[in-house]
Amino acid sequence: MITIRPIAPEQTYPLRHAVLWPDKPFDYVKVENDAEGHHYGAFQADELVAVISLFVEGNVARFRKFAARPDRQRQGIGTQLMNHVIAEARRLGASTLWCDARLDAADFYRRFGMEAVSEVFYKGPIPYAQFSVTL
Image (cartoon, rainbow, N blue to C red; front, side, top):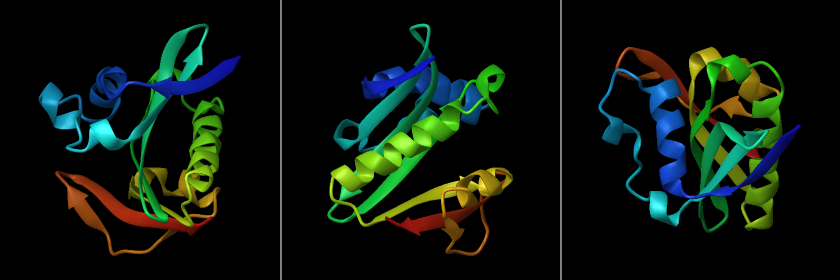
């Protein structure tokens, strides 16, 4: 069973680092405005297995640093966390939700109605595009 609950920004850092940027220094995974974000963790038997951070400005929300432990991927945990963040974005008054998505995860985001709204760009060797959905 998965439970999703708010967590402190610092609780997201180990998973962000291990999953998204293991070859970068630990501080690379910190976001300048982490203190202003809403951070959520997916817990399985009280173990943090996935994280996501939501930032809302006016009616626009952005999620960042979505990471699930590799041994917990493709089990529906990310889907539960994504549905939670969509509901939270709506609750917080957002009418648009967007992210910078790794292209290898594009099909996952499309399942939530998100579509690419930018050209491909790179963060290091990794191709990305901005994805967005109207809530």
